[in-house]
Length: 211
Image (cartoon, rainbow, N blue to C red; front, side):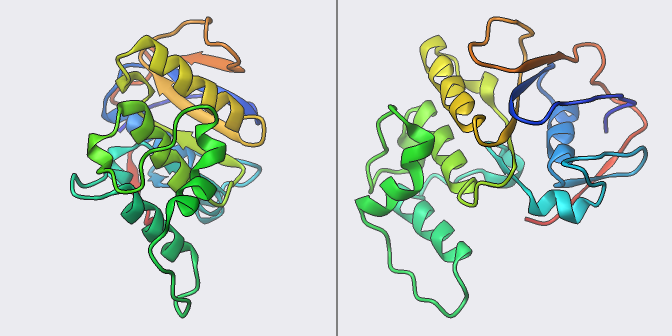
């Protein structure tokens, strides 16, 4: 649960919600993209209050509650599964080659090295793992992309690279992410919303929506 809140987020670019990590922050991020339904209050996203419409016009990534990857999954498995998910049920989709990984991931990764085809996702560096999860979740490029776990990256250089990639995606989408810090020094970020002391347990509950 979280709330009560009164929050406005501008469309476009990258918005960082600065708040302590925990269930309330996770619930807020999931509610903003239609993956949780409010039990009280109202939420308007991209001009609509209908949760099904918000769901259809958004993507969410790097949220273990929704897209955690099993240790035995390879990069090839993950990309192939998403291609099959995106395709009509009657179309046969073979296992991808390196070109398939490049096609799905190049825009998200930018200058960051693409992951090896047969590598286990769990063995990849944290930066590659998170960018891969974003690339897979964001194949349809909807207007809204919500990304969790930014503050799970311990290395400062990798976190800067991660944020740089979000800023690049924010040129064509509205991107919302979260960090425990509330600093104005994020390069290229449009808005930092400091919610420390505001995002706690309260009287607004949520119900999880489907994938």
